[in-house]
Amino acid sequence: MNKKYIIVLIIILVLLGLGGWYLYSKNQTVNPLVVGDDNDQSAIDNLPADPSADSSADEAGEAGEADKAGQQSEINTDDWLTYRNEEYGFVVKYPEGWNITEKYKEYNKNNIISVENMFSNTRGTKDGSIIKFNIYSVSNNESVQNWLNSNNPINSDTETLHDMRSKKVASLDAIYRIITSNVSGGYFNDITLINGGNLYFIETISRILGEDKINTEKHNIEIDAIINSFSFIK
Image 1 (spheres, rainbow, N blue to C red):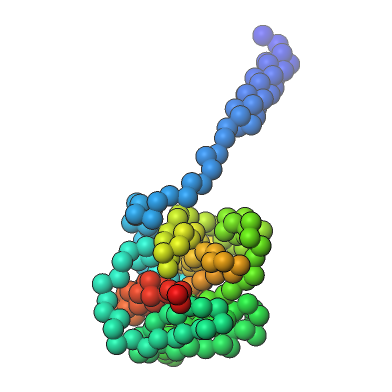
Image 2: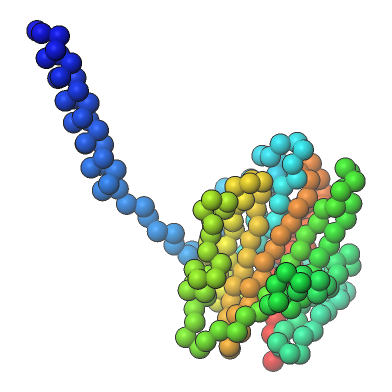
């Protein structure tokens, strides 16, 4: 067979193969993310307990409550301090070592208060956790999902949505999200719910060295208990 015809035949076969691959990929669909039940722990259980362990030794992970959220805390909170906000009608409890601060209002005017616990790590830098309670006025027909889509969408360039589910907070339906940072490899999360004309956006950020297992576990448990203590004044 003439070498010229062989080359032409190869080109035709390659083009047919590329065309078939294109049609196949075009017809593929991606299953939408389903908000699961609060009792479904499978997605959480499959995540590494210490996200920052996957980062380099010199990088501190944002180790949040990813593997603890949604579980009932067994910690006794009877002797915890209580913050009470009459204007927005809510209370939250927090243990010794955690402090109430309003300093984050400088960055977000809707941040009512934050509860934080910061400490010096073994490398001489600051580690710790922050729970920010942000409140936004919303219309009567606003939904949590629509608000998140419009005001706090996932930035696919820097973030990956790891899990999203329904959750009961203060006896109300809320949406809970676990988000992975594509930069640090760590986790942070938020809980969003609506009560009356107010939307409560509770975000947790935690930065603790990967090798600090004691403080990571302690903060995970206390973060979970602090959020579970959130309730509305009747």
